Length: 235
Image (tube, rainbow, N blue to C red; front, side, top):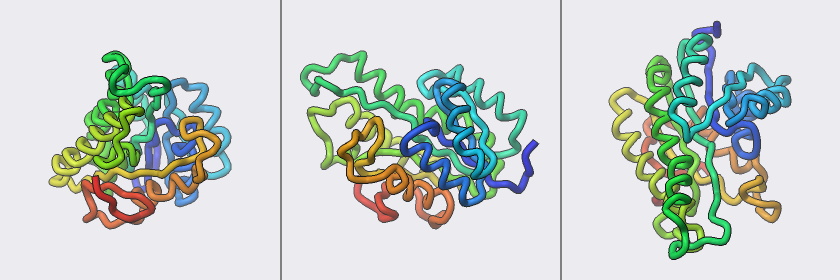
């Protein structure tokens, strides 16, 4: 059983890339971190790499599967009294070789399921643990592709999923404001990851910085906003 006074964060898709860098940064700030991945093996491998930084709990969780989200909650209820930070980082970028005129309904649905509906369900399901925190924060990893002026016809499902995620962030912030749960979205920039590719100019650590700041230091009065490099940007 964890110390009731310890700070605890959960990072979806925390086994690699920006999610892994966020987990590492939060551990350095003294948080206990739950790393989720679609396979328990991948979560465990990431947890082993981070062992020297602090307490890491690996959990199998697929944000596209409600049963998987609920199983993860039940397994964590045995160990946790509360959850202080939920970072919705897991996502997919499947728009190779399609545009808004050729993309199938199935691909649109699968991307929105992973990048948008998964985030909403994570907040809904983990709300009982967030409500027990004195300083609960939710950070949704979005993208400049989700900005109204950043939409691209050649990246159809990803753009629409992040546009909808930004909308969901505004609504979640409004709905959770009475419970003093701060909800924000952030853009990590173009980052060297499996998704971003090798030519991206930013490191995962640079991409993770604003998420870590929102989770730990940002004013709790800042809610429902979209951030990049610790500054508010327009939706």
